Structure formats: C-alpha cells, structure tokens
Image (cartoon, rainbow over all chains, first blue to last red; front, side, top):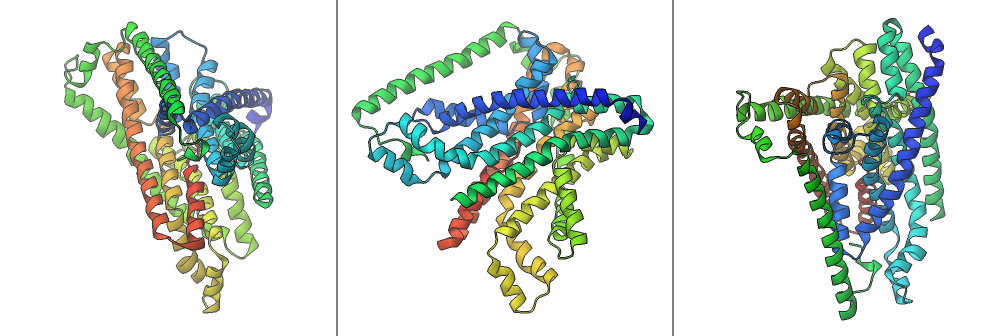
Length: 215
Length: 292
C-alpha cells in the first residue's frame, strides 16, 4: 500500500501522459479516419481502393506490430523520432481504421431515400454528402466512435511497453521497484484506467439510447 | 454499395471521373513507388537480404528460418489464442448466465465483473497474472486474454439475448419451462447463432492481442522476429518484419473473411419479414464490432 501512496505523483504523471496520448492520437485518428471514410464512399475508384486496402490491412494488424514498426523498424529507414511521437503515430494510424469503419457504417445507415431525394433535387455528390448525409450520419456515428475512443484509451497502455512512461509504464516501473506491493500497485493503475473507461462507457450507452429514441 | 450517393454518370461525367481516376491512381502509385525507393535507398531491402528466406547466412538453413517463423512463432501465437479463446468462451457463458439470473445478489456482481474487466487494458491483466499472481509467462498471457475477452463475450451474448423477440421467452414460460430451461434451451442457442459473426470478430481481436505477450516476454511471432534479427544482424530487421507482418495480416484476414461469410449465410437463412430486418440490423452491428 505504501508504494502506492508514496508514488501518487508518479501515478498522476502517468495518468496525464495516458490522457495526452489518447487525446492527441484520438484527434489525429478522427480527422484521418473521416478522410478515409470519405475515400471509401467516393466516386473515384482508386481512392475507394486505397481506403479499403488501408482499413483491411491495418484492422488485421495487431497494435503491438504497429508499435514494433515505429519503434524498431522506422529508425532504420527514416529520421529517428522520440518514443512519444512514435507512440502517437502508431496509435493514430491504428485507430483511424476503426474511425473510418464507424464513419462508413454511419453513412450507410442513412436511408437510401435521403440520398435519392437529394439527387432528385439536383444536389451534387459533395452537397449530398455534406448537407444531407453527414448531419444525419453523425448521430449514429457518435456511440460507436465513443467506443473506439474507449478502446484507444486502453490501447495507450501498449505505449508503456515501448518506452513511454504512461500509466502502464509507471505500473511496470513501480512493480519492479516494490515487489511486495505488486498487487496494490497494479490495482491502483487499474483504477486509474477505469476512471477513464467506465464513465466513457456510461456516456456511450446514454447517447445510444437517446439516438434510438429520436428515431 | 453506396452508389445511391451519386447519379449514374453521363458521358461528360464519365470522362471527368475517368480523368480523376487516372490522376489519383497515378498519384497514389507514385506515392507508393516513392516510399519503396526511399526504403530501397537505405539498403534495407537489398536483394541479398531477402536470401534470408532461401539461403540464409551464418550456417543456418532456410528450413530453420521458416520453422522458427511458422512453428515457434506463429505456433506459439495460435496456441495462446486457441487456449485463450476456448476458456474465454466458457467463462463468458458462465458470466452471461449469472448476468441474466433473477436474484440481485447474483446479477449485480456479475454485471460489476463484466464492466470492470471490459474497461481494463489486456496488457495490464497479463502483467497482473504474471507478477501479481505469480503465473508462468504462458499462463499469464492466457489469463489476460481470458479475463478481458470473457467479459466482452459475456456482453456480446447478453446483447444477443436482449435482441431476441420477447415472445421467445414468453412462449417458453407458457409451456411451463423454468427460467434456467428457457435460458439454456431457447435463448442462448439463438443468441449464440445470431452473434456468431461478432464472436468471431472478437476472436480476431483476441488473436491480435496475443502479440501483447511480446511486451511481457512470451516467445511468440513478434519475439521470434526480434530473436532472428539479433541472430542475423540489424540490417535484416526490415525483411524479417515484412514477412512477419504479412503472416499476421494473412491469418487475421482469413478469420475476418470467415466472420463475413457466416454473416451472409446467417442473414440468408433468416429470410423474410421482420426477422430479416433484425438480422440485417445485427449484421450492421456486427460489421463494426471488431474493437480496436
């Protein structure tokens, strides 16, 4: 127990690093994933193919492998970057494929009649998408997106295995430094993760119910 | 698929879109070629490096390399995934039965367990197994996989049960079945079938998560890549990584295809009316199911 109380500042630092990792890579993944989602429904076949290939490859790749690439392989073929940046790159690239799928299924969930009506009144592809489809797709997209971000918050823990001192990194360090207190140390870290994931899960459930009722 | 988003193009639009396609196609191809050239410049994909797969240096044979990759590496990955998957399914079933039980003192703790373990990173659970509970590495990896995935599977099965029409359970009690009988002989079999695609997607997630074992020192495919690199030298890292990644992607891709195939088959069987709409809904749900 002592190890936990004494090292509360370290926990706090790890918690902040986890949050920064999740927020920054979440933001990048949101933008990149939405662009990929647009690629996947666009009328330009090469863009569609690119979007599909990206999602199929990245979704079937373990996150650890993406980290392995950026931490070990990348320095051999490109400029070396700090581990924190590698972690953000890995998390963003990985999460973007899931954002893309959420966005795409949101767009597909909007009734066919909506797009047909938009075309019937003469709107172009861009107009149809931005005025008619996306505003309606957004509400269906939000709950799965929250789930993607919850998963991202948990996935930041992989960065701890690749030299970033976030929560799991702190857990490793403290566990090795205080062997008798291992269980208390790890439970402390677990609670820190739950502080992020459980409220976010409740929020996702709430939003989902609201969306369902509005339909 | 989403062709409703734009009109069937006329001759002018077709020409425009052809030009657009060619331009973006060339741009993407140019980008890829540029990347390959940049990597080639570093000398990490030189032809003689690839010989590691046909005629490796340092007195080892091609068979050694492939054995380490497929038997020791992929084999260990699949073993952890298989043991973890079977146990997770079993524990997940127990959790959902407890979760759907009538008495609160059974239902509430089960709900709590599901919510807590769903919210924790798998790597933390593996670490807890190894350091906190003093398990050997393999058991620790499996422990992390089982605890997390059992909670997720419990939740998937519950969603499946909830999505069934209430008439199913009502018909069961009308013919005098007890609550457990209704659950085991009416609700669960249907829920499992309905959620089969989601369950397989979750198994893909589990298979991917075995690679977390790399971090806590389980010798699986990633660790073998590292070991082989140390043996042959750092310059071989890229070619070794490339094939390792391809193996991972191929295995997961095949499993994902099975999930999609099952989905299609499932929705074809449930033809007609409301059931069909339901199945479509479940399909849309299952499609985005593979959690990051």
